[in-house]
Image (tube, rainbow, N blue to C red; front, side, top):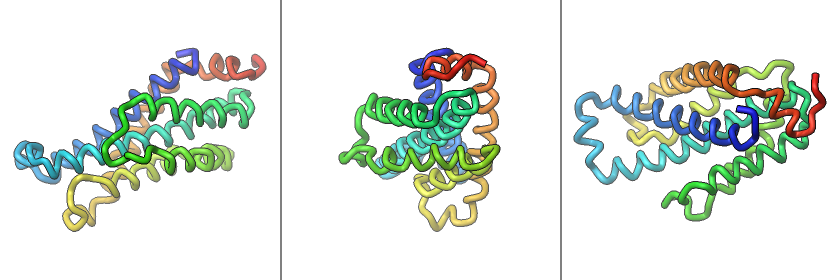
Length: 190
């Protein structure tokens, strides 16, 4: 992938995968064979839809924070990267039908993105485990299993998300031409 549009599709696809994989795996493990019956109940379907959408937006923001750091490290200017990723985040989220529970839109998530992008640049080496861990905590908060039945499981969900981010990070390194995208944003060739 060599263009910002390719990057947007890549990030969207992987954010959806991580959010769904981690929430579905947790729910299946937690309720066992009852998962099939539970998946037919409207209350669970509604809660699961909220979990998937919120998890998707959260994973996408975390992946954009890591991407922003990579682009700046490749020579792109931080302000340009922040603007491009902000616009990309808005475009990707608004490219989907608005979920029922988000009638007001994604304003809170969009408003939080600049801080996340800056935080990923605040340390000499951004720690994937910290960025993924924060995303995992958010996914844990919105899981479609009642809080009293999952109260001791936060670490499991955080570790699941972190594990998936390690795999995502490897795919990112192999498939995304960060230098080419940075150059398209005005970075000088190395």
